[in-house]
Length: 144
Image (cartoon, rainbow, N blue to C red; front, side):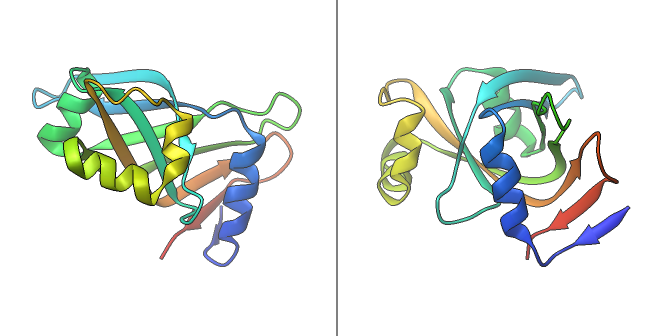
């Protein structure tokens, strides 16, 4: 498997060609895995950052609050099989005034929803990701 740290714009390119849907997996304190299909928005300033807006009472929020562990995989492109996955992620929850500050700094988050009632923003910072396809060998992209 090839390892790449230089061309992180390839990551943005691939992500932009895929549907903005991921499977996000989190784990509870009693080690129960919870996966859900959810839409995301990529940060306009940081290639390796994805934002999710979700109800504050979901399992994913509870699990991230408990241990911060998350992993994800994208849908795949039907023609090429191109897809991205990662289990090397920092997750952070923004709510209240912190959420409003984050949305002001990253207005692309508003594309997910403009209803902030009972919602939080989850910021996923990807440190490395596996890029796979039907057409080429898998590569790992690492972000500094």
